[in-house]
Image 1 (cartoon, each protein chain N blue to C red):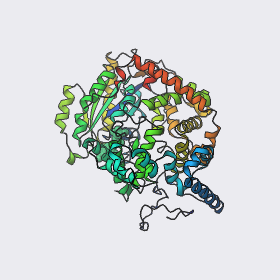
Image 2 (cartoon, helix red, strand yellow):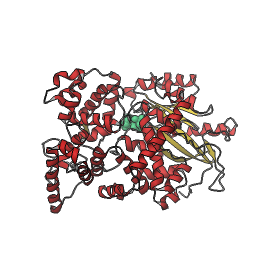
Image 3 (tube, helix red, strand yellow):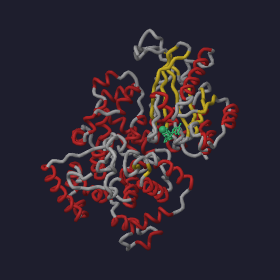
Image 4 (tube, chains in turn orange, yellow):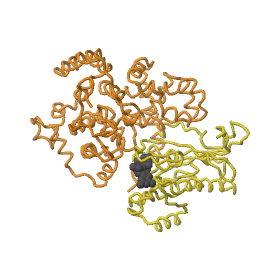
Length: 378
Length: 216
Ligand SMILES: Nc1nc2c(ncn2[C@@H]2O[C@H](COP(=O)(O)OP(=O)(O)OP(=O)(O)O)[C@@H](O)[C@H]2O)c(=O)[nH]1
Ligand SMILES: [Mg+2]
């Protein structure tokens, strides 16, 4: 498939098999729900070229731009990063590009010898990849990769597993070696897989590391403490956006874990079609975790308009609605517009954060034994 | 299908537990949709399904929570044991480790549910007999020693899936009939809805909203 805007994104060079199915530019099969064929008009192409130029310039003098003109970068991330530069822009935004990684981690004990090496990021990745891993964890990961995006050509082709599965396993194994305290969490799979649809293995690895170190720190850790905290924060932000839903959800004992874990942990890769997901990630890499809150709040608002809410008679009705968002909100432009218009700002988020953190701490003091959460099993 | 939404007299709450990849979500899907979902993604957090069944002429609505099998999700999934009338504990007959972990799942199930919760052991993937790693007899013995009901099932072919869910319901219903399950007790996992109206008496179960932020 050639793409209308000339951004060819081919996993391999051979011509498509003479079968009925073909794939979109991210590798999704034409007969699956994630498949997305982009139509780009001439006018769009012109706009796209302009944007690409702007981004090229910014990336060219990145450090200065990010220091002095962050609002400009933010604005451009909200408009969407051009596909051809997306991977590079993401890496610059989260500082997972080769140079940043070399500088940040080159000082670590194991990596002294790479300090001045141009390929430091690649070599450090290989160091982690080839380190000793608990064979049980390796088995767990290998068994899991087969279940990741089976409709995508990167991972499956003609019913057989494809190269991407090995890359995915590698990234996840290297991650557990690099961050043994966090270890392997199934939620990392979709995130790493989505990264691999955009960039090669070692870059996906470092970007995953940066996401976990800097953005959603602690989401994947045993006990899921940060995630549970964010769950409570989200639950309490609903009242600013959709007070009726907030009330009803509380009255029916809907718990945030029942709908938000997959959203937040997988950074919405399992919720939205990929073009929308990319736009969310564009903002996420720039603005951080509050983007996840905004998207979640828009989803709740759009899944539970007043008439729908009224018809819900129990928590399962509400959860079903939250699981099947209306088509309109799955579209990138609509979703992002709604995110901008939300009546929630940083002040609200920080206030809730402080409040829930206090609650959680108080609660942990009371029930320490129950919250041991971890241990005992093998 | 003239059955209205309230055309049932009981709600039973179930939970499905067991190691990752043993087929919990596939079993639930097979039971609610009568289809095998080969491409099932892993469960991140919790999912649910419902179906109305009939036991001894009574319509019963099953509310089934399907939990993530990976160890670290237990921090979240543990709060779903509370108030379950039935617990389906699943292992994979082709993977011994999933069987070896049963005792830890059972400990959780016993500690976090009420004493009357019916625990049903399922050996899944019985269609893969050639790759069997756990014999029927030893699992049967384990079940007997621990007072569990037991069947080998296949979410793929559907073999015994219906029976596992229904036998659990029958046992719960029997416990109600002979008085060993007290519907008035909090967390019995059963709600009784007199069939004459939509808002039946709520006897325990869902209503006891837990507002503590540590058990989301
Ligand atoms: N042959 C066979 N395969 C099965 C059967 N049940 C499930 N599977 C396969 O086993 C894998 C895991 O199934 P799931 O239902 O997702 O497992 P799970 O227990 O829900 O896993 P987690 O959500 O990760 O805890 C899938 O690839 C299924 O296709 C079965 O009865 N027979
Ligand atoms: Mg599952």
